[in-house]
Length: 181
Image 1 (tube, helix red, strand yellow):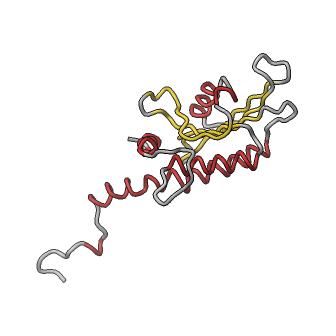
Image 2 (tube, one colour; image 1 turned 90 degrees about the vertical axis):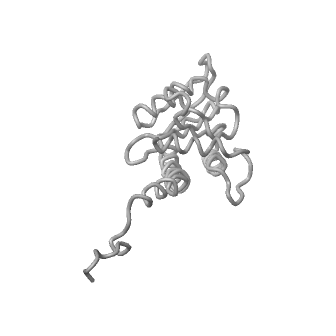
Image 3 (tube, helix red, strand yellow; image 1 turned 120 degrees about the horizontal axis):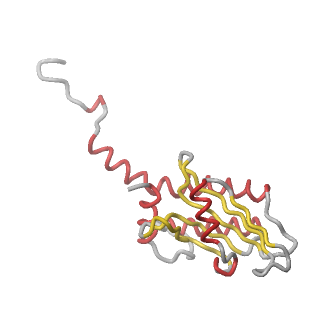
C-alpha cells in the first residue's frame, strides 16, 4: 500500500474536515487549516487538496476544501488535477472575460514525495483582472512542502515504523552468541 492510499485511509477515519484543529485532529482537518491560510494569503475564491482515490486509482478525491465549491470554481478541475498527478508539474488555467465558463484563473501544484506526485493543491480566483502566476506558484510550492513534511509524512511515520521495528533490531540490542563476551 503506498503513502497516498495510507493517507486517504486515515482521512476517511477523521470527521469535520472544515472544523477547528484539536488534539488528535485528523489529517484532513490539518490540511483544511492550511488551505484556509493559503486562500487568505493569496486572496483566492477556492483552495482544495486532492489525493488519489483509493477506491478508483484513475480519479483524485478532494480531501479538504475551502471557499466556493470546486465544481463552481473550476468545472474542469478533474482534468487539471489528473494532469498534475500524471506529470508532477504545475498546471495553469486562465479563462478571459467573455469565456463561456466565465473569467477565472487557477493553479494546481503537485505534492511531491521523493519527486513522485502524491497529491495536488488547487487554487482558483474568479476575479476578471487577476491572473495567478509565478508568485502564487512559489507560495503554493511552500504550502505543498509543508503539507507533505508536517502533515502527510508524519501521519504515516508511525505506521511504517511499526512494521520496520518488528523485523529489525539494532546491533546493541542483539545478544552475543553463547561463549563470547
